[in-house]
Length: 289
Image (tube, rainbow, N blue to C red; front, side, top):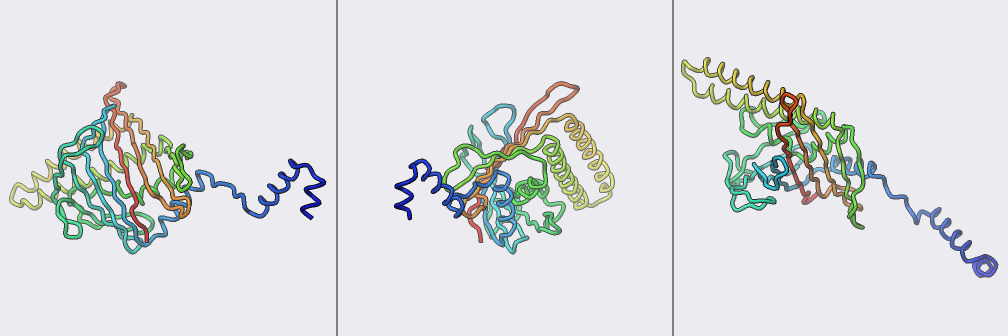
């Protein structure tokens, strides 16, 4: 039959017939949209019982290439809903993220290792809650570096997703930009959580000191904290926030391989731009089970 077709039909028409046949047989599959890739990645990581990741974060002011408050962190998810995060803080920081030493933080060692503060979290009712005591330092700050929670939050927000150039045969790279309103609301919520953690920490220290001066100390600390909170909220009221994520996804498994972000905050005071700073993070997922 194919011999008869080749003799009686033009080559171009034959190619069209072959293409239609192969397409109907499923040999040509439509590539997933960026939104579909992201959705599958979030679903994939949500179904994992265990995973390990490593990351780093740093603060960059204005357009400087120099990072401040840079630190590294690692995390381990166990039993689907239990997560432990540990931090390490670099000592002297050079431009472009280079480091020349590690200065340890005070806190609980992870797996018996010194040189880092650790905190535990549990997923309850779809939300991650800290299991460490409310007064422990960095308790509030660490929660924002949970990449699983970040992906879950991004999934609920208004955003635009595009495929990035440079995606290979094995990976897809997505550029995810949050809607400015959602990005700002999320930043304010995170800052509120960190402010509450700071307040709990200092009130705990005042209570631990005991003595007759305790009530006065607590009152003064609460006053100072309230002033700081009011000042921060005032600055954020007219602030502009731009948050962009880059997600690298394995084409075969649909699981995230890397999640990096840059969240820029432009602050204004009395209608005049005061400063701009950016929180930069980069997380690599090392293993899944």
